[in-house]
Length: 189
Image 1: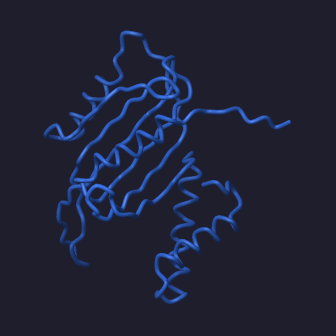
Image 2: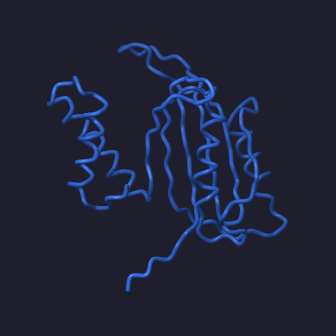
């Protein structure tokens, strides 16, 4: 997302990513892949996403390959009454959204002030054939909202993983990203 509205620079990055990821794919198919990435980039950029990344690497702990997507954006955080426990509120929301208590919410200190982190494992319907057959597949979701205690601007970092057993590792990544981030004022003079 660093290129902003410089579409040629973004297209060049997408082309390099596709070239490295699919070196044996015919050029015309790679161009279609690039077009899809550009469409996705335009959608994310128009909706306030500041950072978008794909992580593909072996986990140091197990060697299992990960395929994670991570997004970050600035969100407005309304001021709340001091007696409001955002962690408890999010726990209730997630318990209702993810049946069977498959969610975990935690509040912790961040460089901005407070952080509210969550993890969940959720089934999604995945096509198993070109026909209409689908099968439930357990995926992972992790995120952190970091903001000043009085509200204002917050940073929301969210990640998804295809292997639900990797959700704790993914939660660690998004917690570090959001936990050590701060907003800075850029001097334009």
